[in-house]
Length: 269
Image 1 (cartoon, one colour):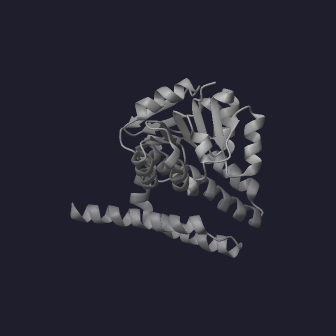
Image 2 (spheres, rainbow, N blue to C red):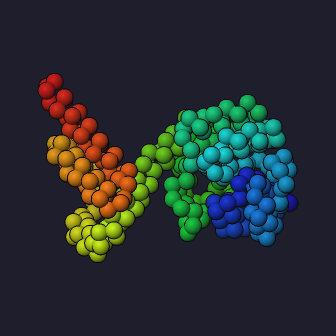
Image 3 (tube, rainbow, N blue to C red):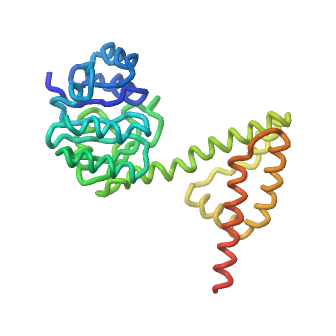
């Protein structure tokens, strides 16, 4: 069977996609972890002992390694990529990192595409939203659709645009997770978890993010000094409970800077 795709990195994303799509021998996969290599065989894919054998004959490559290995994967794959083959970089890395990887792949004759996966691959699987950018994004859209992906969208012709959306979005998504951890550590230490969560439920008023963002920024600009002072007291509270206020200390700084910026703009007017 003709090889349609090679997967470099067979962790959660790679194995989830391969399992959902049932690519079988039309796909090969390589992972540096021997345990994951055994999964490749169990799923019916062509196992590869190295990048060279994984990429041989593949017209599409899905790079699905860890963020810290994205450049290394491009370095390892570049000598063996088929001329004109698509290297679809789905790793969660900064735009500058994607541009470095693009230069490596394209100097070897490959066609690089910046891809950003915007949700957990499980349970979404092939329906997971994916953004594409770069000169070869249209080709990648066609290629990914042929592999069974159903929720792919092009956001620009510049490598780094898709990953910029992903990375900036992650400031909020992962930041909320980190804030949740900090809040719960303090609530548990103080023995007030039930009351804190109930209070949040009572004050929650869902609204579109554009509207919510405008409101939050206005509150920070108008009341940032007062809110910064309140959050400084929150910092003191967390420290007294033995919780390192990493996120809360950053909130103090952001609130204060927003108020100062608003004051400078007002004075200038």
